[in-house]
Length: 260
Image (cartoon, rainbow, N blue to C red; front, side):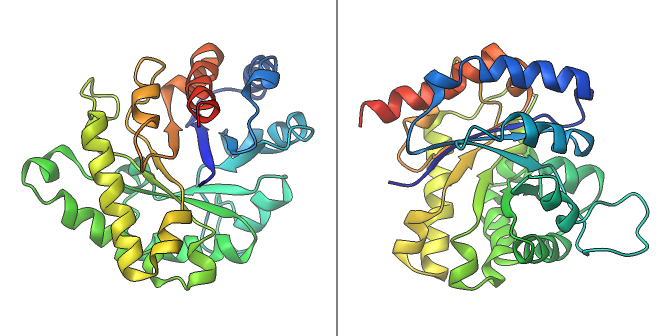
């Protein structure tokens, strides 16, 4: 069985003090959230990484992730944060290619490919995001968009590298818009992504790679989404900022796992 993952992307939210409170609230439910096949990832802003790593160091099923990284290890790049720096905080994952990075900071596939490579070189697990906009889906080009986002980034990796990747599918049209993808739509794209990975590499490699859904997952829809064959968890945005909602989403996955 593939590892199931619930990742909370805090985005540009929470001060250090607020982050401590949120993590401590989540940890109060730690006993109920454990499962041998479940990994929880918290992705706070850069200034909170060390604190988050320290607070969760005794919980092996909880990992810490950065939300972005630069594609160099060091140098005169004012304001940037390298994978080596992220690794030194105790974090072991990094989100790369989030739709907001693509949209607001104009990060293209070529740059994201470089980030993925340097992240892997520093022992970080990339959580690589791909997804289409509403106009691209309406134009029926969404499969081509996703295929291109895979081919120009993670498909340049070798077999040993690709199995270290986590993929997150985030339909941009279903993030913060009030329009949600149905479980059927989400499963359809996850199956497409896994098929593309299998075509490039091997079936057994494709079956090992977790693919997360990142389109406005909430306690109300988590169970139905996570029950889909090719959806291995969620990259959670807004709901990860509320401990009750985040724990409820995690519990949905735990319930599914315990039935298997």
